[in-house]
Amino acid sequence: GAGVSQSPRYKVAKRGQDVALRCDPISGHVSLFWYQQALGQGPEFLTYFQNEAQLDKSGLPSDRFFAERPEGSVSTLKIQRTQQEDSAVYLCASSSRANTEAFFGQGTRLTVV
Amino acid sequence: SQQGEEDPQALSIQEGENATMNCSYKTSINNLQWYRQNSGRGLVHLILIRSNEREKHSGRLRVTLDTSKKSSSLLITASRAADTASYFCATDPHNAGNMLTFGGGTRLMVKP
Image (cartoon, rainbow over all chains, first blue to last red):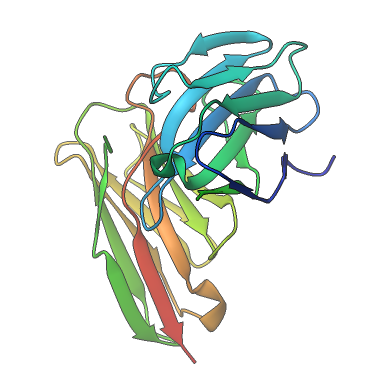
């Protein structure tokens, strides 16, 4: 596709519900990143994949957060038993290789009620 | 935690004026990037400046980098209403290739 695509754009979840957020990176991009952006703040790093390998997950806030990229292209960020503090925009980015421009998707705005 | 801090947090100017935003960071870097974010949208990459560069231009954008002071500035000349957005600086303190640490952003409003 032309850019990084994320779905859904908006998600409202009841507290305690599990959610899955999808990211389609630019075709051929090796690196994929997930960020969390709270309202009025800058994005914060969650996790990083190189192809299918998750090389860093140090930013995941708790063990309720899980990310995968099984075939090295599409990635899913799963949040189990959502809490109100999980409400944020979740951004996905991809890049062709390290230290090159990262392209961001439009994000998924998650609201936990 | 966020590596960079932007200053000011908010800036309001008239169309045609120049806008200057500053960014400070904490650790050594290989490069520093500036991004723009329109309300409710994703981030758009503006410019990347490497640690061995002091100044870089792209159209109406001018970025400077002072590694001794661990600071960078973004200048937008002849601003337009369409420049209204949030601007973020980002660094890769772990040198892991785009595992970016962002500042809190400067919210720029350009009044027509």
